[in-house]
Length: 166
Image 1 (cartoon, rainbow, N blue to C red):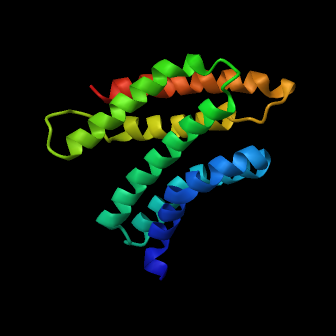
Image 2 (cartoon, helix red, strand yellow; image 1 turned 90 degrees about the vertical axis):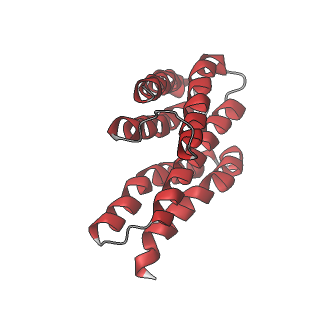
């Protein structure tokens, strides 16, 4: 069981958007905190696997899917939660992320595309996930500035997606 702990953590991350999205609309603060835990657990599962020699191809693939699930769950949730707040400013980066992810998927299955999965791409994913912490702050007038910070961070992640794709 211990050897599968990183995969279990990753599997929980993979499933987390299915629970966090509906929870956000009923109890935003607990969903917000659990989302932060999902973000931080991204580093924990990989560290455990590398430190104790528990790495596996299954774990690597699950981690990639979990990252995508969390990012796309966060994008979807942001559009739903902020539909009245000018989410159009997020449209261009969302298109960039869609093209980037399609490129990664197509490249993985043999098409001749060069999309990096190196450090820059990892930072893109971390920054994109971190942006949701700002974008999804519960609607309070005193927190609206954080939403704008989140928009900026989201755009930075999109720029990194473009940069790591070349």
